[in-house]
Amino acid sequence: MILPEIIHVATIVKKLPPVRRNFKNYLKHKCKELKLKYLIVRLRIEEDNRKSEKKSNKNSYEAKANVIKNSKGKRLLPKA
Image (cartoon, rainbow, N blue to C red; front, side, top):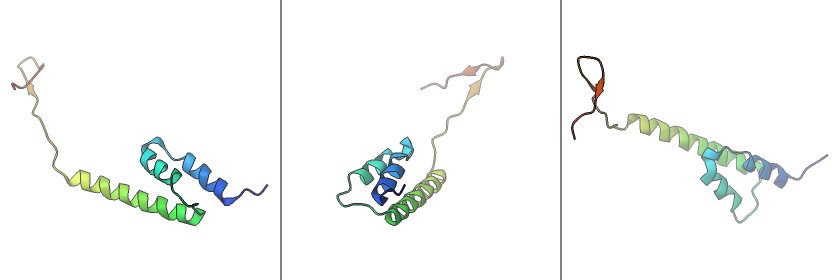
């Protein structure tokens, strides 16, 4: 059974994980039809963007808190 390319594209978009909800909605509401080869390009671009975001988040400064323990080894909350 041969399925039209638009069915393939719609199925792939539907199977995207929930983490990519915004990207999925963007693809769904695109005005013109999306060819399979362009979908693959878009997915690769999105993946590269996510990888670069993760790298930039690792390099950013994070807030850290010190944990204070009493002599019995129980945690004490720092004073505000």
